[in-house]
Every structure is written in C-alpha cells, then in structure tokens.
Image (cartoon, rainbow, N blue to C red; front, side, top):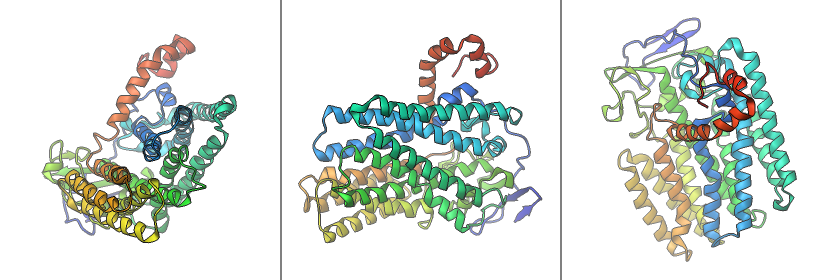
Length: 446
C-alpha cells in the first residue's frame, strides 16, 4: 500500500513487492555531520577516493599492451593524476555539494556521507569557504600546467577541466529537472531521470580516456578510442546506478526481512529511489550483516540475482562486450568480423556473470578462459587482450556485493591516513586558533 502526505511518502510495496508493514517515518533530523569543515575542504569526497584508480588503471593496461613506456611518460601520468583527482574532481564535487547543501542536510545518513558539513545556519560561511577552495584548486591546476612546460600538460589540463565540468553541467541540469518533486517509492521513471542515469557514465570516460591517451595516440587509433569510450561510459552507468540502488537503502527499514520505504520530496533522491523497482522484494538473510529488523543499511541488496533489465545489469553487459573489443584493439588492428566475434563473446560472458547470482568470480574466471581462447586465434597476446574484460567484470562483481555500511570503506581509510599526514602541516600553517575554529569543537582530527 502507499500512503502519501503533503511532504512525506511511505511505501511498503512496489509493482513487484508484496504489501508489508508500514515504514517508520524519517521525521527526526539527521545527526550533525561527523566531518569538520577543514577535513571536508582537504578532501571533499573521501568515500570516492577509490575512483582515482581508474586513470592509472587504463594507463597501466595501455602500457602493458604497448610493451612498456618511458619514465617521462610515467612522470606525466603522475602529475596528471594529481591534477585530476586532487584538484579538478574535488572542485567538481564541491560544486555538487554546494548545489545540494540543503537536501544533503536532510538526508537520513547525512552524518556518514562526507558532504559539505552543516548545519544549515552556517550555510553562508561554509559555502563561501568551499567556493574559495574550489576556485583555488582550479587555479593551481592551471599553474601546474604553466610551471611544468617540459611535460606538455596544457592540453591535458584543458581537456580535464572542460570534460569534468562539461559533464557536471549536464548532470546538475538533469538532476534539477528530475528530482525534488516526489516522495513516492519507487519514484516514477521519467525521461529526465533516464537521461541522468546515462549521463553519469560520461565522467568515467574522462578519467579512463585520460590514462589511455597518455600512452596511445588516439588520433591514429580512433577505433580503440571509441571502443574504450563505450566501455568506460557503460561501466560508469553500471557502477553509479548500482551504487545509487545501494544508497537507496538509507530510506528503508526491515521488519522480519520485509522492506518498508519512507522519504520526503525534499530529499531530492528520485534518481536513487526509482531504482527500487529492480531490487529484491525481500531481504535475503544471507545478505544481511545485521538483524532482520531495523535500518536496511546492512543489507547487500544486489549481491544475489537481480532483474536483467536493471540499469546496472544492462550497462554491465554493454561494458563487457566493449571491453573485450578494446582489449583486442590495444594489441593490434582487427577486422570488423573479428571485432564482432569478440564483442559477442565478451557480451555473452558478461551476461553469464550478471545472471549467476552466486559464485560470480568463478564465472568471471571461466569467461576469461573462453575469451582468451577466442582471442588466441586473433592475437599473439590473448591474455593481455582479455585483461580489460576481466577488470570490468570483476569490478561489476565488487560493485554489487556491498551494502551501505561498507560503501566507501577504502576511501575512509585513505582519508584517515591522508588527514593524519597533513594535520601537522595544516596546523602549523593556519595557526592553532584558526585550526581549532575550522576543525570544530577543538578536535585535532582532520
């Protein structure tokens, strides 16, 4: 049944869910953010730090396929990685958090999400500080390109800024059009929402093609660039939509394994809650890290088999097919017929991983053997050519295995270590009183 109030909607069934007990309302305000303003400004999205592996990963795969790269190329890649992941992307995240500041403060898991900290009463100074730091990050990125002329980074920095913020503009426009209008669960699937799910994958193209372009002259190998772009875009869609589906569990509660959903239109989370329609109707006890009664944040909602029509599954199959072709093209040119055979093999092998439900890593291993066998007839480096497919499918398995409680654990560990390393420098630079003021309540933890 569905009960709708002026601002709150509580739902315990969907088109695929049997009726269940009503969810407890989420009227209580969320706890104050556990992050300090200084900690946020140093690292805006600690739970997203693991995304920084994408650029060096594509760089490494391309270098391996090329038989190695000179030390100067490795140095360029290291500087580009710093610019991308410590300057440009954090500035983009800050813009997103500024736009979503009010909605983020109302989120039931606000204290653990790592967004721009509140409270709402300090919005002016916190937003102003974040704007200043974001602008400083972009200016520093430009300065690095100018101060290191021997590395020829100007074109890369321009590409990174235009690519990251071009995607950001499209994302913010679509999110504004698609969210904040309904507290219904599952949220209606509207065209703007579907476009939002698609656009989110473009950021992964920017990250991944940057690493590839440092090794491969994409202007001379356009088909490799196209195949890699499709792989990265589709993988990005699979990753983000699966992550959003898991994040939606913040709005659910369990009673004897049955799910109740409760949200407000002001949460502006339709892009998450529309995905509920493809999630299981009940929480499998094997996928719970806590009790079957209470918050659903310990539920690994996607660990078992989910509908093949779910966005994360459809995108994963496309990514797998394109990844197989990308690996083949990185090891040399091929015919259209051979590329088609590889694409079908990679797509079917990925479909097997998606449909497996259990023992997915074993299916990945079996698929890799089959794909390498097909590639063995086309290229002298079949294992290298199969690596992009293995990476994509193994990453998919990792994406769908977690729950909200474990999401971003690696990023949290990296943030903690980075904060501990930078804290003495920041304290000495800012002075103890300013450090204490920015850090909040006299804490010395960054």
